[in-house]
Each structure stands twice: as C-alpha cells, then as structure tokens.
Image (cartoon, rainbow, N blue to C red; front, side, top):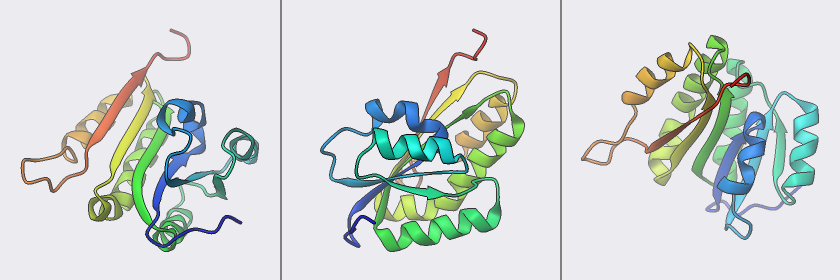
Length: 156
C-alpha cells in the first residue's frame, strides 16, 4: 500500500476513465491517483498503466460502496479532481455519474477541486447536461468547475 500524506492532493478516476489517464494525469503530478471501479480487469490494468496509483474495488452504483469510497478518500487527503467516463446511451450510467458528483461535491468545494467528464454521445446525455448546469461555477466561486467532453458513440 502507498503511504499518503493527509494534505496530499488526490485524483479519483472511475475505471472507465482509464483510457483518458495519459492526457489527464500527467507523470510527476504531485497527487495520489486513485482508480476505483467494479471491474477487476480494469483495476489490474490501472495498476500496470499507472505505477503508484492506488486501486480500490468499488461499485459507484451502490450507495454503501460509494460512501465507503468517500470515507477512504477523506482520510487520504484533499480531493483535487474527479475524472469520470461513461456511456451517454445508458441512463443508469448517467445517473451513477450524477450521484458520484453529488457525493464528492463537498470535498471538491473544500479543496478547490474540479470534475472532468468524458461521455459518449447518447440519448441519456441530455439528463447529465441538465444536471451539470446546476453545478457549474458561479461568480461567487461557490460551485465546482466541470468539464464535459462528448466522445463519439461506439458506432460513430
């Protein structure tokens, strides 16, 4: 297990975001990278692709699993960035992304963090866009900056 300083910046990625890691998680970044998800295969790939990253088996769709993950991250340090990916055609995935953002918003606000989402095009993406309008930054700086990148659907 990796030793972590309590004030260290932490980047949380879901396992679906692993292909995005090279562009969003620069080598030498002074942050602990955590990859979480239910896929043991993707978590094994994360260990190989991101040396030093911590992997945690967690199901973002389960409330208890999400709460346990939030507790672990709180002990690890300051949540600096949330990097998530998903299928815009899957309503359950969009709901899971929204719930994950809501769970980690307080920690992101305290640490001045941000959210990066990469979602493939699909009919459920509109619900995510509507949700994101409510969490976008305001002039008082109260909200968390969110970047949404729309990826082509698998059949595009």
